[in-house]
Each structure stands twice: as C-alpha cells, then as structure tokens.
Length: 181
Length: 264
Image (cartoon, rainbow over all chains, first blue to last red; front, side, top):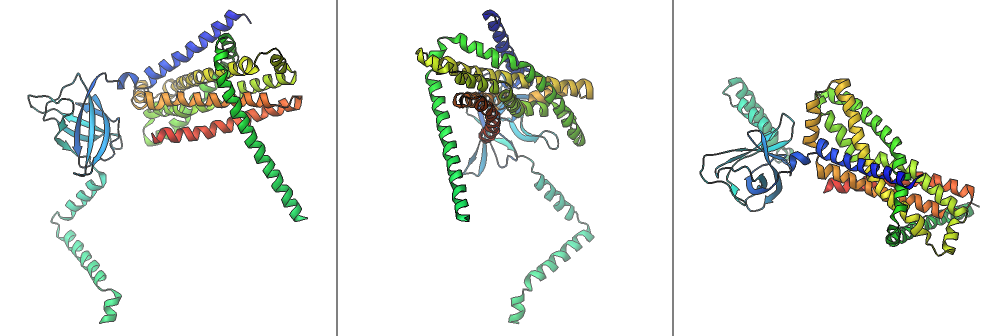
C-alpha cells in the first residue's frame, strides 16, 4: 500500500482514539464537573462520619461546591477529622454548619454546608466548629425502640420488666450456686 | 516398576518446569533487548507507523463491532436486573463503569491477541523459518531493531487507542438499547453516568490497564514468533501458544492490576 495512505489511516486511527478519550472524559466521566478550579481547604471534626468517603461531594443548597479531601482519625479527641476542599468562588461565613447527609435512602453520603450569619468568612486552614454527625441506622432504630418502650404504655413496660426479671433470675441462678446451697 | 514410573514422571515435571523458566528468562531477555534497541528503531519511525496500521487500524472493525454488541448486551442484561430494584436509571453507570474499568481493556486485549498477536507470531516465525532474520544479521542489520521493536511499539500504541474506542462505542451501544429501545430517561442515563464515573480513578486506570495489556500481548506474540522452531509445525504451535498465553496473561494481570487499583 502507498506510504501516504498508511500514514493517513494511522493518523485517523490515533485521532479517533484521542477523540474517544476526550469523549469519555467529557461525556462519560466527571472531568468537567469535578474539576473545581482553585480550592481552599477547611477541616471539620465529626464524632461519627458513618460511611463518608474521600471525594464525596460537599454541597450547599444542593449545589456541589467542593469535595471531601482526606479523612483522618484524631487519637486525642477520638474524632474524625475531615478536610473539605471548597471552590475559591464560594465563600462561607465562619459559623457555617456542616452536616453529613445521605442522598436518598441507600445513597452515598455527602456533606451539606449551611451558611451562618457571621461577617468574617472561612479561610484556608480554618476549622468548622459546628458539625452534625452522620445518622447511623442502627442508632436510629435503637432510639426508636427505646422511645417506644418508654412511651408509658403500662402493658409494654410490664412485659418489659417481667422479661428483665426473669432474665435476671436466670442469670443469678447459676448451677454452682445451687450446689453451694 | 512403580518407582521407575514415578521417577520418569518427576523427571518430566522437572524438565517442564526448567523449560518454562528458561522461556520466561528468554522472553525477559528479548523484552530488554527490544527496549535497548527502541532508540535505534525510533530513528526509522515509519516502520512503527506501518505496524500500527497492520495491528491497529486493521483490527478496528472487529473491535468496534464487538464493542457495539457488548455494550448492547450489557444494557439489556443490566436493565433486567436493575429494574427489579427500581433503579433502571443507573443503567448508564453500570454500562460505563463495566466498560471503562474492565470490559474495554480486557476484551480488547483478548481480541487483539487473536487478531493481531497471531499475525505477529506467524509473520516472525515464518521470517525465521525462511532465514530472513539470519540474513539481516549477515548484513549487520539488527533484526531486533528492524523487526521486533517496531512491532512492539506499534502494539503498545495501538492497544490503548483500541481499548478507548471499545469503551466509547460500547457506551454508545448501551445508550442505543437503554434510551430509544427500553425507554430509560436520557437525562438520567448521562447525568448519573457523569456523576459516578471518575476521570482519574476509572478512565485513566482503564487506559493504564490497556497499556500494560498491550505490552504483555505484543511481547508474548513477538517472543513466541522469535522462539518458534523454524518448521511449519513449529510456527503453527507457536501461534496457538500466543493466543493461550496472551489470554491467560491478560486475565491474570487484570486481577493483579485491579486489586492494586481498588486498594489505592
């Protein structure tokens, strides 16, 4: 085959490959949405971050304004230290509230920022002091059950107490005691 | 009698192991020599371009057609399962992630081994059988710089290009089945995909995988051809071994690479 024809085909081939990569980046991937130009980093401490992962979105009023950076554990306070990189275009007051929310019932977790009313804004390296932990489903269920049990319903409390009594008896009356007696 | 049989069996096993290790070493040596003579072969880059045409451009049709069907089947199968959980909009994410992370690089590499790898092995094996390689050496032309290195780099260049095209065309196939045929919402299809496919973690890692597969498949094909006994039977056996070894190497490497990429 002619040399130039081969060159042309190889050129088309490589150009197609580059176009496909560009297509993947723009149409399929999140290069366009995730590249948040310049960012500043603030940290926030949480007692429990649930299933929050690095690179989870940081949203304010539902709009993505940044991403979760590193997540570390502070061995002194036993808290999770989450660093958030936030787009330089968006400034938040110092008393901004950081919550961990879940998208949908089983969706991924993200951080929601609720702006406060302070005059001064958060700067690079600042710490968000007001935070709310992730909702852990097991805790929620146990709280619900607890509140149900202590609703003041006579019957419920009676059965609960009897059950604990019998449970206690069973524990006390160990075979060794009987032998001793 | 039994002892004699066991002894013979063990000898066979040992000889097989030594042979395998010897071939691995010889393959590694050829790889190293290829890298060393790459500079020399790059000075005549036209040779590499010619090989890109033969291994890459001529493989386009089989790769693109397979990609289209793989994407369409993924969308059909994925929809069937996702619909049970009421999240058929996630079909875009499923198709894109499956193609970009796994199927794109792996299926491309398997097809490449069958389409281009066998051709390389047969060509070089036949060059060896007809003593063309020896003739080059006689003329003080290094066959590694003249024949092996251009084909090696052509494979390394062609594989990522083919794999990216595979992913893109596969996603288009998935789109055609999911949106016009099944009736998944178009906006949800693309937006969920964009929200969940990461440029660096998913797409670039997929490209990296295909580069590694390109090195492995091409090198195996080149070595099998270079090492083939110079007979008709030898070349045919070498061609078979190329497909078997490349496929196993691709699947094994895929597991290793994926475990590293997910751990990162």
